[in-house]
Length: 129
Image (cartoon, rainbow, N blue to C red):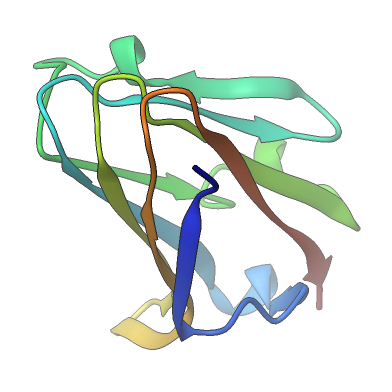
């Protein structure tokens, strides 16, 4: 069975982030199963996070920020989330753009459903303003 991908907020392909104004990306991964398997990677730095890196793993929700730390900032970085469905039937992946006053907008939100043999990946580029 192939992964069923349902965009709620379609992937824009590229996200503009004004880091000088304090903007950053906030990621949320909601997991519908007992043991989520995922990795979050950068085209510049390689794998940044895997599910076991989070204290409390396995959980039903994972959250992390990117571009808050000046060492994270790379022009035209490609960010990718890879999901496996071996022990998790569905996921919801949300990427929000945040500023100093809070959440500005949701730039991507996609739900996925798959069978145990399925894997999928969602990527987008970051443009630093």
